[in-house]
Length: 192
Ligand code: SAM
Figure 1 (cartoon, rainbow, N blue to C red):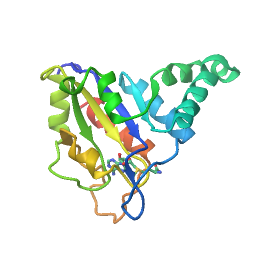
Figure 2: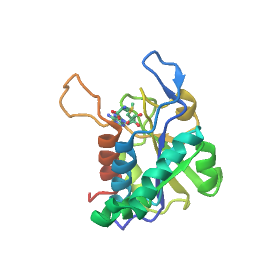
Figure 3: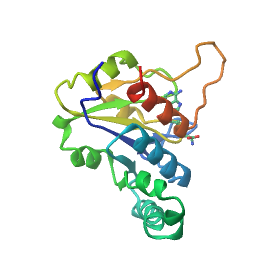
Figure 4: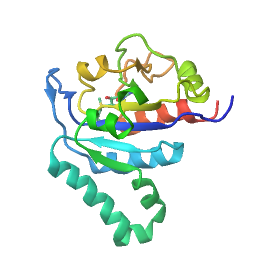
């Protein structure tokens, strides 16, 4: 199978996501998520890692983290991290993320969840779409926080990816979004 022909970006959504009671809430930016998903994005070649947050102070926190690594002592100590964090971009909404990628006609949106959220695009088909060039649209893979993506985000997507799970029925599936993102990118962009 040829190399990946289409651009891919990832987004970590902090609103609208669900709380334990299924209400739509806004979650806080987690420093670990900034670093870990940036590293996964850079490792697998995702063009941009959008951190979606409606609150300016939270977006400024992301910018401060990235700036600290760009210009501070940490970046001098671990230059590889600077390269990863360069993929991170705080943005107010999913809508603005789509605009940043050229508008809805230019973006194919895939969402993820720990549970089945509708007819899934198999990883085999998803890999083929990334490699056959398709209609050339950028693929945006959206990850949630809290207890997962709000239904409105899922409904607005073009496809859902299958939940990552063990082959055996372990009765437990509570991956961190950091783990879920890395596994998802490896299934999409890793060697077959
Ligand atoms: N604070 C939590 C943490 O530990 O990261 C956030 C959990 S949040 C629900 C996890 C997000 O990661 C989901 O919205 C989904 O995007 C992704 N995710 C988690 N488990 C997954 C799975 N088994 N398969 C696919 N995606 C999963």
